[in-house]
Length: 113
Length: 113
Image (tube, rainbow over all chains, first blue to last red; front, side, top):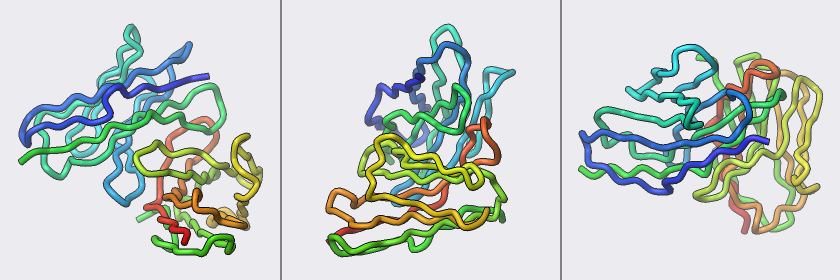
């Protein structure tokens, strides 16, 4: 079965600074990879996804992520963080057929003004 | 805009009093999911429907039931809510089996008194 690890529970960055959120997965082949964002009291919003092809994927709100097969990673990046990016970020993996996603435990992002 | 709608957004129920949460979608997706999310945790899948085919997770308590009367609507019934069932309940949809990409509603925050 697949698994997802988000090593950082909390991250604090200054507004305007760059951001990288880490995600590592465990699966024998290339899974479907996703990043979701959740603002307080809200549902999850899909930021970006990777299925195949170009390993650098662009998403909404200026986010991008890079799939690295050799490191089993799918890290999320943003060159310049805005205060409105403060939220919880979940990495998720879909694999093995069926319909289910496996979520990481999430990274809480705090943005200092 | 096509979307996933959850009603109500906030629900307060008494210990042991049955409660029903509602989800509707205008995406015409085949798959609908119910997740439970407790504070600072990843969403936990309770069950999902692929069309009318119901798929229960092995660790979902019997206290939780679901109905999907048609493509657009799906209900979560909690027969006898306990204090431990207080959580955010998220509904999600995906188009077909194997695409994994899920679209989430805004959630219903359930409080049990």
